[in-house]
Image 1 (cartoon, rainbow, N blue to C red):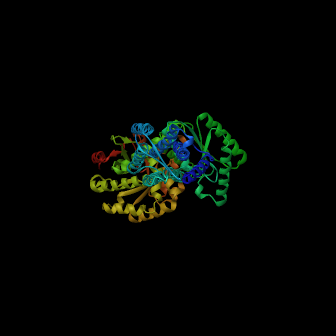
Image 2 (image 1 turned 30 degrees about the vertical axis):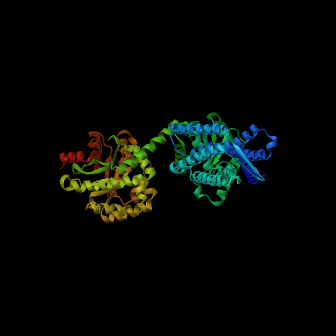
Image 3 (image 1 turned 60 degrees about the vertical axis):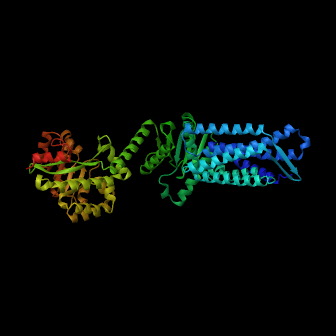
Length: 627
């Protein structure tokens, strides 16, 4: 009988079934669709063989049974086309309403084709080993199968640009092979190739997409990072909640030695093998060589966390794993937020290795989302030039007038409201945007000084501009700032740059280089926030500054603490003995201003004189107070 090709197809499908079912799987929607499609293909191939056998042995079958067998075979062909289309649509991004509507149309189509094929007559041809069917029933099969193939190709080619590239390529190859096989069989009916063409499609899909081993990490046997993304995406799409635990065995893994890296790998393998025995838990290994455990509910997650800690402490007592626990996945909107969250806290851990666990509860996630919104707002503000500079005047106790000012950054949201600097500055420092913001503020300040001729018209001798820690790390800071001053043709004596204690101790070498270049150009420097945190007079000794600014807390403590009063007076005398000048920040009352002036401090800054003012209001203020 003419079934050699079909028998080869059966063997191939049997092998695919074996390798598909022997491995553990996540039961992803695509995996289930593939298995259903392969089951229909297997049924189609077996019916192809059975129909050939029935035609060759017509004497053993009644006319009705023979027709039923042969029609069932050709009906299964259009069902192969139908499930091939449904499988292809899995990755095509459409609205759920449109997808449901189209699926109903395709289902009605395949059912109508089934009824029509069973209703129409069918004929048989048998001569030697040449055997095939023909007639109206077969013609209808070709029409419906071809329609499904063409719809599949058009959907994938025209609407599948955002599909998984491998899935798109594999489906196009499958459909093209099927069209060629159908055309050959239509022109030469004794070449029964259509069923085998479907088998080739299954082979392509299996090796390109649906091999379960592709979702496994070879070293640990856990699911891999790709599987984690696909599985969590499916859970979010179905709105099925879950709980998660991330276990990181080391800190900055890129800095590990070979021996430490091998030890981490052994630990991951050991823990993954142990976790594989836990019920109702799925284990994944990330690209950062961490393990993620997913449980269906919070109660099971806490049980797993307890068991993991006990196991790790028992076998690897000398290690200090880092745990990120997400009790409720519904607190995050989608899989993208989940991975951004894990990445954020992974980076946070590398910056602060003192923590050994973080629980992503509602408060933590809300704070994280607020930071993300603030960061997006900062980027938008930079793009739309919503960075503003306010100026707070500084009073000279000797000249009894305002002689300088501090430039302070302000940002408005899209509704025009001022965002407090305490909200956006720490985030800008963390993500690096502070350098762009700082340069923007400096450029606007230089333009403001030059345009309004502050020294000539108002007696404002210089304006202080803050430098962030991140800016001080930049080797090109001095060159960039000199270029900006030259662009505005601004005298460098009009600028005083403020550095902080943290900047001077953390990145001393780069900072000193920038300071030397800028001081040679004529810029002055001030040490800001003295008294905030662990104040150290060595900063003043080591840094070539000409002004020291007492922090607001230090100023206020002078009036509320007996000990703080002596500390501030002692610091003042030492600083002045080094021929440096002092600005006392945070002065809020007349009594405080008079006391600070009587103490001998040269400059006063604070709300007693003025809050930070927008440019035009600042000009009006100093015009009224000038000279």
